[in-house]
Image 1 (cartoon, chains in turn purple, cyan):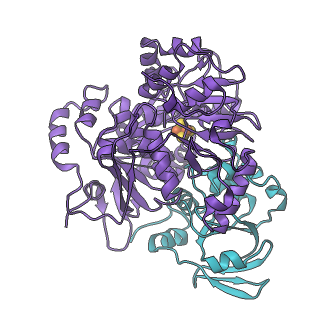
Image 2: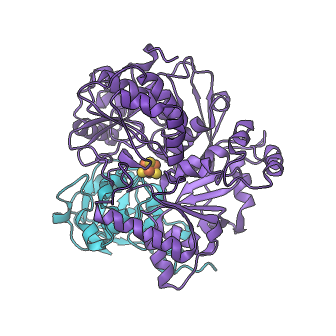
Length: 471
Length: 161
Ligand code: SF4
């Protein structure tokens, strides 16, 4: 019987395998950031261990760096300490660090691909759940906990239980690809399969709806695999993948021979079997807006906030969850999504802060002004994205419309740096999690695509971006 | 292992409510513990006692990689979380760091056990006794590797045979 792409990559990385027990898996790349690494380095020191392969380990700071003026000192003392700790750890253990002043600094899942560190067929880990992003390149990439970070630092391997392969086919053609985006595809999937629909699996995304997407859009899809509960998301590499990685700063010297190998080997065999299958037809999907407190609580922009009994389909826990969510979000069932007014807009995060995301959002904003009661921030995913966007004049388009244009980092995706919502504030956000308090205590998050966020910023409430002229 | 139950009757308790993002910078575990569950239940800190258990629905611990989540719970005194299912990273963090036991239960235990009930959990025989209600439930056994890591006292003490 044939093998899935996931099984091929897994098998190629087995160090030790025994029946009915976990396998020891070799890790090709380890990405490190300031939040989940300090205890891991402490652990190494305590046990007199070194980092086994500093050359395969790359660090950056993204989660708690401020995104305003970088020449100012960091005011928050605990953030400053966490950042200095990473600097010291990287120095002591010989790890390359892209620090706050590096032109390569950025969100760890944005810089990996853009530097050519993320490669097809490799295993990539990071102490961060959205490591699944790198799967867009046909890499087996997943988030790990801090003890596992220490284990990888010390041994470049991990004990893992083998996940099951899950095939998600995306079929059809979107009618308006500028308005209905990769974000809407992945939100639709999570809405349908649920936030634990992918538990214990590695999802492979396939079909016309995937090959149509650019690499940056594919990253948006794989990024949110974890929100469906999956360990990782995976897309077989194709010519777009190879083209994207060609000539980047860390792309290997023997790249073309690697490409030949990848082209022949990195795909699921036609007779391979998946544990689970799901198909989404995208011909008629609408822009999505989350209304609740997990990414599965999402509906079409043309719909209304659901009634808990309709949403839950008879499941008591789901019903209670929806009631709590509506209370937290201060929403009444039956309210049309387009009548929900917003206070803040956040265009950023490892889901949607790449160049293409910013270009698409800028088309909505160009020549218009921010709604007077809204505060909007655009936070590029990396310093390189920022620079490229500025070369295209995007910063000007946004600032002319009264949006703030900021430095790279995780920013308002999670409330641990100065960019946060105030209690009760409602935000249209291009990030990936709408959990209670995610963007700041009491803050209310609606997940949307960059164009939907931009349109909401202009109008002051959600609008169906398909009705705007985007060309 | 005996303790009382704090019950959260909902699915998808995520790591952002277990320990909100602003505390991820905190390194002092005792201080982290002060903010455990703050996103969901501001009274948690005043009601939790050493040895207590949390009982909840499906997909407990979904969300981020933050090891701070099991650490905050364990330093609050929580010895085990009983849930219908767990998100993988939380589960492994809890076991790898030997912070607390993630115990998968069935619907009967979930619906029958109430807030405050005293339980006696015996992971050697996969049994949960409800001393308050005088009932016994089965827990789902740990997989072989998880059982071994727990026995060893965490991932770094675990030596594969
Ligand atoms: S942008 Fe958000 S989701 Fe992505 S790595 Fe940063 S905090 Fe995590």
